Length: 226
Image (cartoon, rainbow, N blue to C red; front, side, top):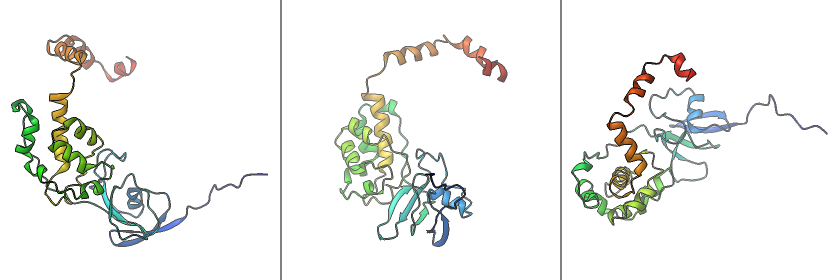
């Protein structure tokens, strides 16, 4: 008994709607691949293709649902009857300049830079919009109540796609709050590695200057051989 070969069999074609126009495309493509397949020249909305950079934020609706969902287009496979569009709009959320060297209590300074964080209405739309599955609402409240460690842990998967920004009825930029908290947590509250401090001190004292000079003067062939 021999197995049936599928070699040479054309992939199944499905119908999708991209930004209001219908296309027949092979099954098994991601949203981005489907756009390339249909001739879309993407100058924005393409980045790492690994779900890390957040550049390809998209909104979509499946065939039998009226619900609009958010996702990353490089990570989401198309379905028959799916309608989607990349989010090409830049969301002008507030990027507040701050200097942690000038702060004594970042948990209070959070309200100086992002006072709207305390106005969260618990609507949870930020969480529903997050393509990485972050409990954004909980993370913001952790920040407000000073639990920077838990907040930072919540925001670790954040790719700064900004999809949480336009849906917030309190005009919070949750991703910016998350960046502030993660930086503050690392600078003020995490235990510092003594080995890292020792190595930085050595670098600042010039212990490795001679070795760096040697490496920088190597040719490409010598670098490959080393």
